[in-house]
Image (cartoon, rainbow, N blue to C red; front, side, top):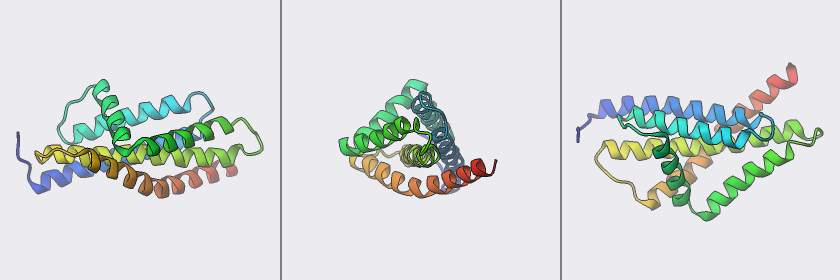
Length: 171
């Protein structure tokens, strides 16, 4: 396995960070999409992001590999994390049908989608970085990265969702 310099690893991380931002922005944007397409679109965005982050670290993955990694990440984070994350996203998606609360629910849905996408991206970056360093991540490390990523992602996604809602209000 190739030994990367610290500078090469930092350049890889910088490229991965661009993919994570794109995943988060897409996750937030999907929260503003109509019911019925948002969950599958979010999963597609996560998979595409994992592929891009893997490529940043010189890894060649298939779409199936990316899907398996996403499943592994959520499993490592634990049942409660996965149920809560999925439940938040599903509940927000279902509540979009009420015109009175539509914009508020879109903001919430955007935050949930963006935070989940950020968590997967953050975890992917950490996971692939360890592989590039010739190390293997433990299930406990992966779970901790997902939880930390969701926590960090909520703040980033909230700012993005509020900006998007402001644009919609002024349109």
